[in-house]
Image (cartoon, rainbow, N blue to C red; front, side, top):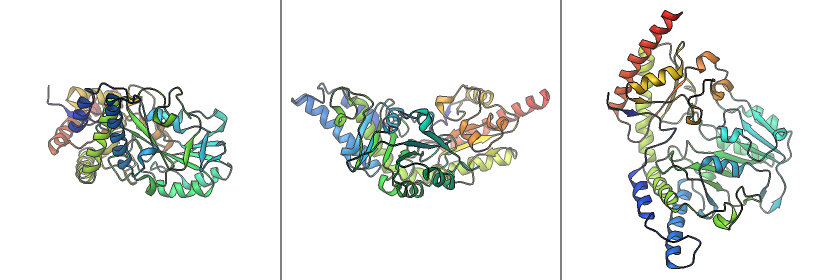
Length: 386
């Protein structure tokens, strides 16, 4: 079998050495972080150091970082009518979300079905700002949820502009920043976000840990998990010290290398797409004319089904996916591409290629060689079957 190359970084990133070291070191800590003795204080110190590091990743205050079991839980914690701003208690009466959100946001959190409305996007996958303004005019106290960067296409939303529109209408803005944090600038103040969800394993930390980060005057009056007073009573349960420590270490490493990694990955991605278009002119790169993450390409070739292509790539030593990892294996077309108005047959062929900080030129060459072999074979098979 050919040497394998990994191109599914948007699903999960390999564990960074710094994160692994932090996890291993924290496993030697005996105490419960809620205990006042020396062992408990050592565990607490590890958690609070990581909290500082995760806060620094997005320019937030550490006291506003709430650790969760992952970004899905962070999204669920954020999507509640019981949000207070500046101490003013007023239930959010409507949830608006873009049509391309992650399934964890599309599940609508703790909002009843009748109080949720999807907002359309353009053919390039950008939120329709006219539709946003029109929708907000119909709500008194809206909560709006828009992802920073799409997990399938990599398209980056104009969050600062969206935040301005939301705040002009007494709204609160939640941003799922899972794919953006550690890859592009994700400063919570610059974005204008009130609530921000991030995930450890997307930036090289361990799986099973994430965080919801709040603006200082935003308070969640209805915790998702009740019990003890952990995480300032916003998330009950004994903290996962090892995962939190790894998350903090990964945040530091990702932040330090972000700009250099982004430039290098963008160059590799652009080369990859140009070579694919040269060898397969009919290939379509989704969101190509919109701002995108530097590491993401979602590509389809008419006549080819993604599930068949992914298996073939795997047999040729390549790990790629068909959009969101949590949707892999499903036959139906991506809801993201459907919202962008992409033809169903073309959408069913979408293959996501996502790069990371260890991706090399040699890896890209390996992928391109496999692409030519796999796609040529599948196109011939499709032609013979027609």
